[in-house]
Length: 266
Image 1: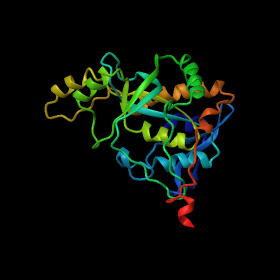
Image 2 (image 1 turned 90 degrees about the horizontal axis):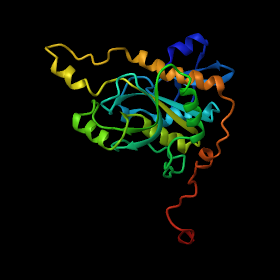
Image 3 (image 1 turned 90 degrees about the vertical axis):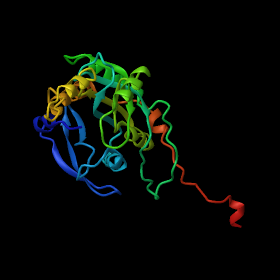
Image 4 (image 1 turned 180 degrees about the vertical axis):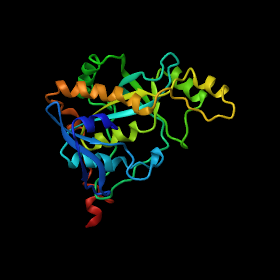
């Protein structure tokens, strides 16, 4: 998450965490409301790249190398539902992966398909729902995030219309494969998202352009991010422990892969 306010107010210390993919130097650690926390500041390591080139595995490995068991992803997303304006905030309940992305397979680990029938930790998500009731703005819960991957761009009207007809809530590019990598690592994972554009007004804004560059956000993205931080803060105030065993037990390994059956090696 990108929370400058939390880092500053709680004097979180910047550290570097080594991983098999190289160091992650965007990590901040400290104590907030009596809870030891790790913040990984954004998903881009070094030069900004398109979403399909982010090393999600490196970020997840940094989390696990620090001994963390619970991870909450925060997202800025596009709006789908016409009646919901920018600033609407969501607790994620499911996602739809639209494909066109890949993750690199680290050959030192066995490969297997993640069990993603329920992609978010139920216990962790319920704790976030409780926290969401204490913030001074409305929060949509059990939201469906459609993960769109393509050439770096914003969604077309036809795509948004389709997503809306399907009953989905928000669209973004990073929830998956991040959630999948978290499941492969046996982490309890949950997600919060804040909507940074208004689907009802995008067309009007384009029609009003007259040689001027579009500036669709009435507030900066950093201002919208304060909503996700507010929920995290309430979450930490009441957090004691997460008793979930399901997510850890869903971690599977496949280290016994062999090209041929045993008898063919004799």
